[in-house]
Image (tube, rainbow, N blue to C red; front, side):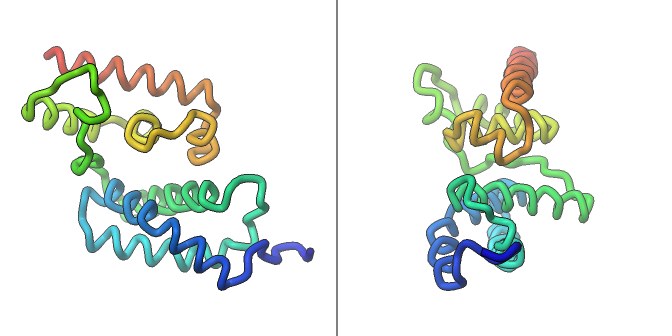
Length: 168
């Protein structure tokens, strides 16, 4: 196989991208504060960008994992480029459903969402991927490019910060 020759043909890429479209749209919603138009534009942009990057897919991971990481990085870079700040990233998540032993009232859920949205990216993103996307640290590491130990420390710090903010 020649260098930069894609492992997937265009029709295979289209099928795989179609399977991952909901996931990519969901990333767009998180990054663009629930704005459906921005999330839709994001998914279209990721399609074009990923197609151009297809020659870099080496097959060392699942295509969906590669695409997920590419989409997150593309979105974060887009936000940086536009100097936009994400203030509410998980508005559509049902936090109580992910914490069955803990019961939250609506005010607490709203407050927790607001606090999560204020966390720096290096705390917020691993927290979202771990608890709301149910990803293992190894996959989060691959997506974010952070070492697993750093991820665990960042999640621990994020939880500590959230506890402190919720106690106030």
